[in-house]
Image 1 (cartoon, one colour):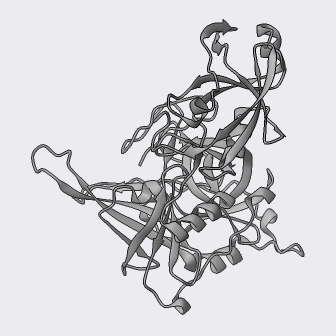
Image 2 (cartoon, rainbow, N blue to C red):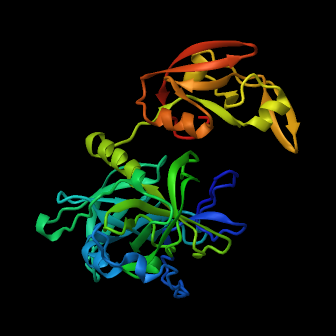
Image 3 (cartoon, helix red, strand yellow):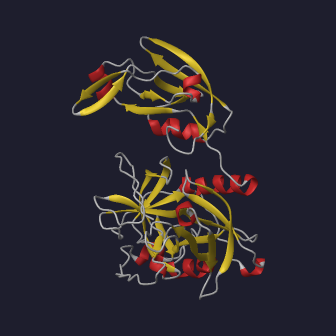
Length: 390
């Protein structure tokens, strides 16, 4: 399925078509139920020099060693949905392909939500044509993650070790294993190109702390593991940035620390609940503060408060004055948040991260500027709606 991205810009979510204009594309592969689809596959050589994967005392392994260790734990995920858009033949079954990986001996498998979205049936296969039925234990559209479970003997499963995405650095060597275009267990290698990226989840929310890499990933890689040089999973491959829908060396993986939190909640409760404040935010920097004569040089300007949200219940105020600075529109007059629970808030990312660390029902204390006065506001966080602004 195709999806759009939002780093610092906004684009529309588009499904089941190749996107142009530099949009981010979810990398599950749709397969025509009629069987007449022709796929053109171009081989892309990895840009990563082999030397960055040479085994050394720090535990780094070669690409071959990583593949031999992790490959048996990577699966192809086939989901079957019902396509009701055919006006002549009516509802027809449609399948899509993605990837996933085993996380424990209990038969739990992680994949992307958009790989199994609206699926009537899900199957996985480890190699060859043998498919095993899988149950969707739970999913989280807000992080584009899902957990599957299969009935298999423990000795037949190869769980992949989970690393620490907070320890990843730009330039680190990485390996991606997946099933691009249905080509099972394909391995590519590269480096971490950037950290702290943002992509748009299937339900429109923002996924934070995303890892950007240049290892080649394409349609069908969705849900597969991104591994570090020690063979540990550091992310779940989810989207690419492309003008053509094919790989151009810009891929994105949901960080494994987010995966751990989501999997834990799904295994315990069958679902994930995210804390929710209910505001639209704008970042403040020195230039903006000086141009608009704001009382602070850093913080988050509340542009709007969602009606009936926890922020609304706590009395937070959104803006009511629209101004244009150097061609950019801003809404002024709202509260400015400078701290949350005693921690400095210098950007919307800061506040989103602190909210993510909370559970629904917990309290957050905000330090705000309103006009010329400073005050403290206590907010009881709610449950995130299905859609932003909902």
